[in-house]
Length: 209
Ligand SMILES: C[S@@+](CC[C@H](N)C(=O)[O-])C[C@H]1O[C@@H](n2cnc3c(N)ncnc32)[C@H](O)[C@@H]1O
Image 1 (cartoon, protein in one colour):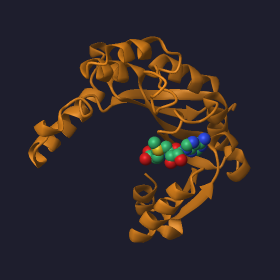
Image 2 (image 1 turned 45 degrees about the vertical axis):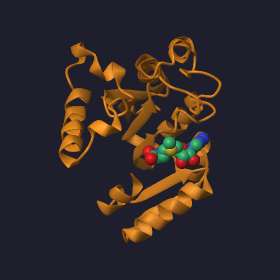
Image 3 (image 1 turned 30 degrees about the vertical axis):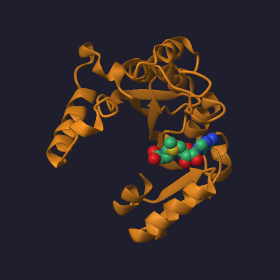
Image 4 (image 1 turned 90 degrees about the vertical axis):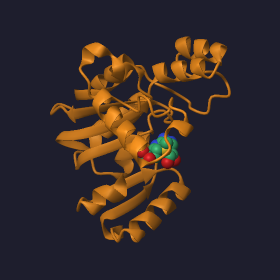
């Protein structure tokens, strides 16, 4: 996200504990000639306020990170603290329901059953992801951090389920992308977002944080 955002003229700070991830970022920023707009900081979301001025940030993109942090409640409180009043956070997290379906369709029924009940939404000890979310848990955690949920929608309903052999050619990929866009935002009653691989939530910092 950082390089495209910098390409639009925004000043972007990227925080990551991994030196490799930061090195890849700096390489990509240089390739796109936006290195003057991108600051790479080694750190952890839970200690965000050590490196970012509180109440200073317009938008935090926290995509594919809450699954890994030690304590998501502490991380979300830190995200809220660095946002300026009225600032936005965009969260993208893995959703439990999708892994239940994916494991079942792959014939791993015991793993699907495990993921149904596991407190962290994992399919077993070998699952590489530390944590997955249900929508209600995510909304509750975000709200507890003093953030006001603006919208939630599903991302990647079909892409991880469709066999690669059926995606032969640009036309099929474009059609699938368009279907994903429409299905992820389709009216709530149909419940399609509840089955997506990821949940995307946008929240605003309430003034009293
Ligand atoms: C799945 S990647 C997502 C990367 C990027 N946000 C994206 O959307 O492409 C997860 C990233 O989170 C970083 N990460 C792991 N633990 C973290 C933590 N406690 N605080 C901040 N970042 C962390 C990892 O180093 C890795 O770069």
